[in-house]
Picture 1 (cartoon, rainbow over the protein chains, first blue to last red):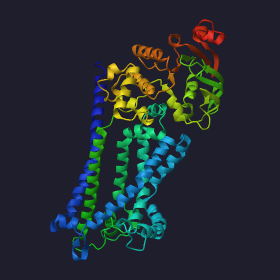
Picture 2 (picture 1 turned 45 degrees about the vertical axis):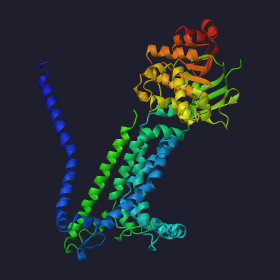
Picture 3 (picture 1 turned 90 degrees about the vertical axis):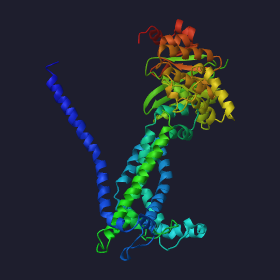
Picture 4 (picture 1 turned 135 degrees about the vertical axis):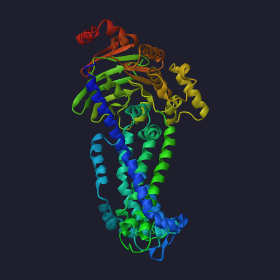
Length: 315
Length: 251
């Protein structure tokens, strides 16, 4: 035993070093978030000092030249586009993931799964170009007149402008972009459900759908929610593709055919320009801070919801 | 009495690999039939053709007929969920669902809409747990997760759950092989008690269990049925050389 003790200490020392190293590395993301937040807050400070928080968050006028910095249109734009995108994405994504994991034969799955994964790898600007060339004309020439004629009396579907550059176009492009993430996470979660559950349920004469609904969903719901949350977080920050199709008009939208101006588009379009305008720089960094806070609040809230759902699960 | 299950010219393949070769069988009603044979001989595959589980494997394909009460369960217009309701399966390892003990039994009743109100559900759950000999142990904790039970209890829960949808036939795919001796005895005892009401088909690779349970025996080897007949005859006077060798423990 005594012979091996130096070796043992070396191994123990190694173990200790490794443990510390990985611990420090795992702290890195946290430090990064803090650092980014502090840096943004510091740069946004001038505007926060000059205007009340209420004026900034509740203001609807955005005229930097006249010193009016109302963020509300941008907050509204972000929420509208994200909500529409997620609502459009979730139902077909869930069904796709269910098809892949529960109905598709392994050979079909082996072909389809990589195709969906590939969608996640397409550069954002490619989606943007596709949006401008396909989605915007489709929304402007087909959907907008159709809804105007049949459902125009509902404010949500009223059209205020003749083009397809709108929340709906942004939502459609977003939905396609976040789909691979929601599909991938949901699929993986469903695949972790033991085969025995399926056999146990099918063996009693349950249909596939009953098995999904009453057995698999119970187990997979938290994971599915987590997948949707991941997709939504991405949707909040998605910039390029959305700004290309959403119209970029700082108004308060009331219809999905209205244009909007989400926070990321505001920052990307304007940062680095017109920097001579007083407080403009601080206002844009304030917008970035705001976006960060919105995403953080959303993630914390969904984690809390997730924990509640998890608390009710069996196994 | 007429046979309950009849198998005619059944051939089955996994991909190009033959799994069952020209099987012809008659399985008697309300008795325990034991399918025995060395591993890989096709016992489990044959069993799975009785509740349409065979087709769940990709590349699985069969020709021939499996008739339950003269109805071919592989006929085009047959609903496999109806077949599985009539033919319950007790798997090798218990396959409890991720729900409470109560819900595990109520689940089958619910999906087939076999009860109307909460009270009759409660009565039914109790009835079938009693039938499976589990009520005494779990009656006071019906709303615990089923996974909190021991493996042996879980297998009896699976039995209760299977009985709840009122099958005519119970299949057992080595249903005691994952269990401790006491739990195995429980299951065997239950199967013997229930045999007057259900047609039971058990796959086993332990000869002693076969002798304890069987009224009728099927001996399989390499995807073929070598010999089938009343247990008494097959065990004491096997007609085929292979059966005799197997019974003597030569392979």
